[in-house]
Length: 164
Image (cartoon, rainbow, N blue to C red; front, top):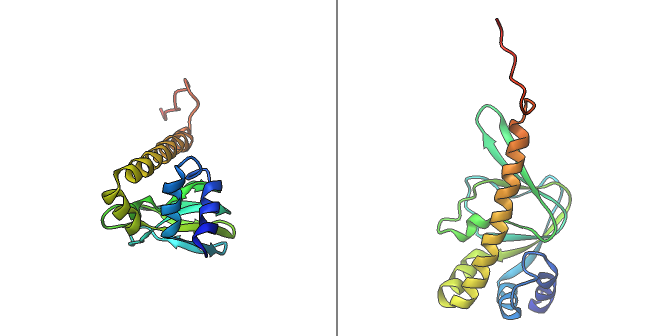
């Protein structure tokens, strides 16, 4: 896909819409549009992946393996959201699995290129990392809320029953 088409797509996504035009263009240059069928994994927990994913269409479940419980869905991301941020770290080992819940289209951004741009261009790095921090902050809040739901087995103010 042509860089100009990818730039247009990136300008429409919530994750990248507020980035300066030159930053969006640089991201587009190292990107591709990829399609995943429902039930297909984009990446797997513990495996190395070299892409940051920005969801254009569809839904992606983020899952983690939990001992004695198996694979547990921890969050679902949709259009405009990012996944696979671990690829930006040196080893790129994924902290969760990304599963297409429905047919999903993503912009796959080469993380190695993003790392190089961040290191060589501090303005690019500032804008990208600020956007990443904002996205991860929102993800952390959403995860906390989900954990509260998960552990809210008893009503507030009600003591659990004890066997006498």
